[in-house]
Length: 330
Image 1 (tube, one colour):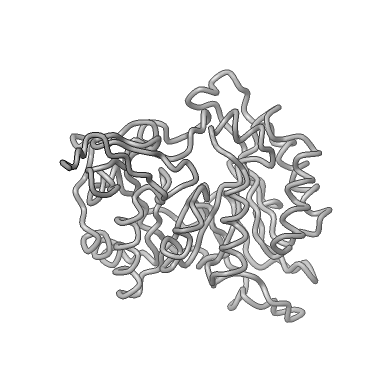
Image 2 (tube, rainbow, N blue to C red):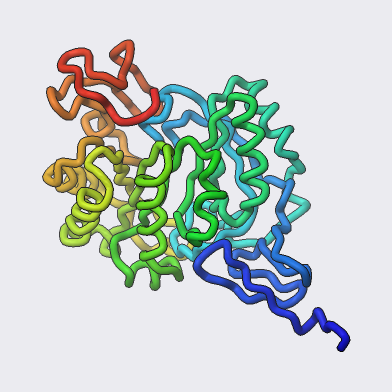
């Protein structure tokens, strides 16, 4: 019997969407497609842009503070966030005319040439370019360059190990603590994200930090925040650094107001009630909620004003006053 490839559908198992694709058809992410034999990524070997950033911009506050990361992204995304701040690349498919051709070797050599401690896979979610990300990360590790993933964590269990195998630090966006929010605003589900977070914390050596963008009247209620912090405390650890960032209008949420500073401060204080040790504000300038202090004796260890960072002790991994071990890589 003649094999009719046009009628053959292949399931993309990279993320929980499990898109079933005919030949030439793209998945939700607008990047992965079926060539009739397997699922592949159209953007393999192409980047949407590069930048050299302070590692604090990811944000990662406990991962080699004051170091720089070579950041790059691609095109498309497997999340459907209607508040996306990078929608100009995440909501479109591969645009060759706007892309920069870059092999994994070239990316690593660029990081080395500019003295970057790490490469950050960011801007859009790196899981959709699994092959490109993992090839680059492997070569980076072989050359002494660290790897950082900035991801929504919407990843199938089948690919957890492969994706995180050569990742050294990760910031996972826990976009809210509500299934309704994920369905309405991200076209996704929260459960796979929580499972990914638990895997990274319990089963890998990755330095993990979490970020929640607080959107007015969407995910900023005291009740929801308390449920999130309670989950972190009971399923992960009070050691996990948590970033609480202010929203600004973007993409399809242009009518929403910016998050006011007091909302961030209130959320910070609630997190502290749950004894989370390392809680930080984001997208506002507030020295108190940006400082890393010893959770035991409260000695200031790292001060931050925006991206101006001052390390106040020779070895911030251990408090010089009381000997408390500080979570992270320094």
